[in-house]
Image (cartoon, rainbow, N blue to C red; front, side, top):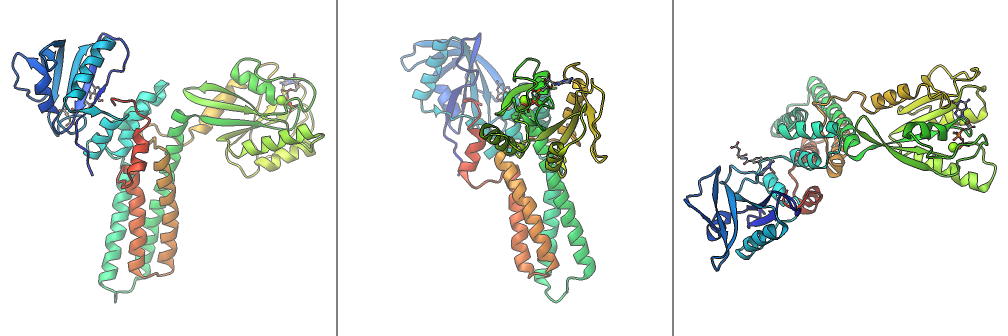
Length: 449
Ligand SMILES: Nc1nc2c(c(=O)[nH]1)N(C=O)[C@@H](CNc1ccc(C(=O)N[C@@H](CCC(=O)O)C(=O)O)cc1)CN2
Ligand SMILES: Nc1nc2c(ncn2[C@@H]2O[C@H](COP(=O)(O)OP(=O)(O)OP(=O)(O)O)[C@@H](O)[C@H]2O)c(=O)[nH]1
Ligand SMILES: [Mg+2]
């Protein structure tokens, strides 16, 4: 179902400004324009801007304006549409909008113009999301990513995925039509290797999407370690002020303390935690429970050790926590003192001193590097939550299909599974049947966008 009734909104924002833009789009919008706009020559050719007057039904002049006219499909929404450039006073903008509404348009919902652009195939869902991010972007880097995404229609990686899946589906059809031809080993091998390629691409896309998200939603870094190693001191160094209490008494921090910083444009939430050890009292026990909880939510962990004392059983607890994790940065603090700590060789560490303020920049650079590892600004896609969910489902689906091939499942059934995979991929680009999911994408846009 495609809505094409006339929608209207103040596109420039309802703030006093030099010029205000009232945007109207819909099947009958140009008829509506004729009723309220009086230029010298009322021929309303596409892509032209006209000077004239907006008049109400009693011929009273509402404002002197410029109006641009767009004709379907050559407009932002793909529909007939126009934009009134009126004086930017609050009352003027309201009067013009009200007149437009009185003449049959309704107020647009947030993002509804862009939703129509999407429904009319002017942009795909990845681009729609990019427009949302473009407006939201708070750092130049986020803006660059959003913009580069807006400029390309489907990203190549998604195009290739579609192509590969279509190939598998076509090949599977052949097997259904010619059941006598056994799936030869060679064929099976080819299919599995193509499926692996698909699996790998989806993983890559998920990885890019995650990194793209860092720029818009931010990332979280959790500082862990046994008591008294200097976790709170490190938090304070990273945020640039005395956010957390620091004392020489082990067990000083008993709750999670967090603070935001910008790391080269990535909004970073840094969390300092209670030192982990065999607890000595109830407060400490609860604090340690909390530390363990936030560890699992972290995009990155900084494990802090005290370089000035020998590795002990409390450090072992921390080493155990991080041993199978990839997203860990090890910091050897107090490196201003004589070094007695020896890290097991499999870990790589950065030496820092919060007291001497040394190594902190190196640590920040390393954090940034780890967050954006394998990241290629040209290929990054910033997907929204439901797109990421679709991608994850697609990933699971490839595993299922792989098993189906290996178990020589009936091609008709394999066909169904392949179709499901194709559907998940289409959801990313935007073939979404469910209106609710779709509205979710646009509801965070401004009215008038
Ligand atoms: N006044 C105004 N400024 C704006 C917008 C707008 O809609 N109006 N935009 C949006 O919010 C952005 C620009 N994006 C736009 C994208 C496509 C079309 C458009 O009319 N496309 C037609 C014609 C293309 C052509 O002839 O070059 C098309 O795609 O067919 C317009 C604006 C930012 N500035
Ligand atoms: N010499 C030296 N002392 C440090 C350094 N960093 C922190 N300290 C000291 O180590 C002690 C503990 O620091 P905190 O930052 O409170 O340690 P923590 O890991 O947060 O401790 P808990 O909250 O108890 O788990 C304080 O006395 C700090 O002054 C450093 O780089 N060098
Ligand atoms: Mg502390």
